[in-house]
Amino acid sequence: MKVEAKVYSANYCNWCDKAVQFLESEGLKVWIVDITDDQDERHMLIERTGQKTVPQIWIGDAYIGGYDRMMKMANTKDLKPIILEQENKLLKTELQRLKRSI
Image (cartoon, rainbow, N blue to C red; front, side, top):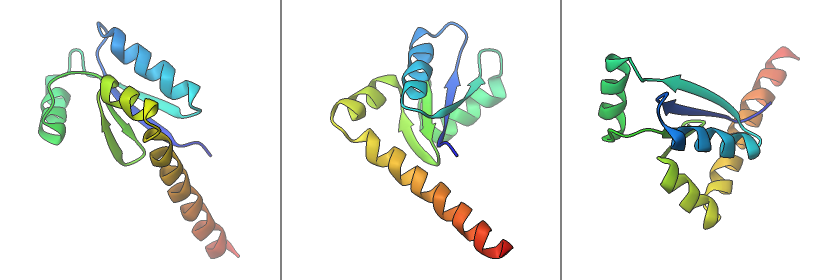
């Protein structure tokens, strides 16, 4: 069971590719939402985040922000606790599921 990350991306965005590579190197399963030609999805992203740029990154249900913020968090050791917290949520959910099946 892997923590999942979601990266809102565009096909012209090198920083999006770097974000995906970094997240995968951290052992996360990465879902890419390409908003290059999807104006509805782009507007939804702006409403949710207030940001017009890509990438926009979530780890589990935790909003991280863009590539620069993610890397700053990684360099200051603030990203790992978020990943661990999301992993903990997954494990708790799985434990509850197993208890119900017994």
